[in-house]
Image 1: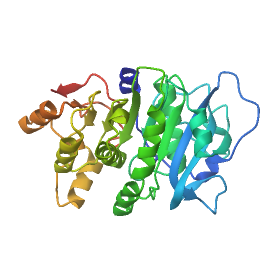
Image 2: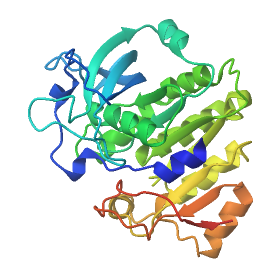
Image 3: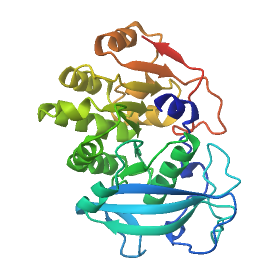
Length: 323
């Protein structure tokens, strides 16, 4: 499952084009076109409901997590790596379309989890709720995920100028993510680990959550996770400290890096030019030692050609590794 995810992973965020508003979450109960695919997405969010847009969730932090299930249709002409956003009114023959939204309790959410075949996606910086939801759908379809994709979405402001606010919002969400990981790994019938894909600032959130689980003595949860950190926005020294506490994982962590990632270079400048893990050079002996000492796998995707040079627009395959 993880290899399929790595080969089909595309993180082309809506910021590359005109960004969709919450109106794309309005349910469409019209006839489903032939060849369309329905995807069930289980969603946990630490965002509060958006009072201005019923059914949507914004950047305000919720007092407790919200648990939801979505049915989203993918158009018959879907092209891998793309989200077919509507240009005006949504059309299920051409666009990703929400068919149904159901609010759940924590217990109801847990009852809908399959015992195998789940995969978790945690988005990064500058991501709006609807972008995160449709990205989770696109990834599950393109990776041919069997079972239910699960989305964890934290209260990103969805604004490129809100970097510090986003970092605080991700930190705010650690306990909720730890609880979700516990649910996903509990009573699994399959011996396969739960694949977890964490992107950008979401990678920092995920690593901090794993450290929290280790300190709480919940190693059984960690042993059932296989983590991919895509373009991780993590201070390199912080990552070393995290790994010192976390220790070697039963299923090694995979880190996707690009030495020319412009967003991570900006993050580095904002942090007094401290090195970000996602900018690591696999030819650097210090990075190679880090990989050996921590048991992680570092995959260089710098040379992968994309239609956009942005931080999120990479398709990892045919990669070089530091080991």
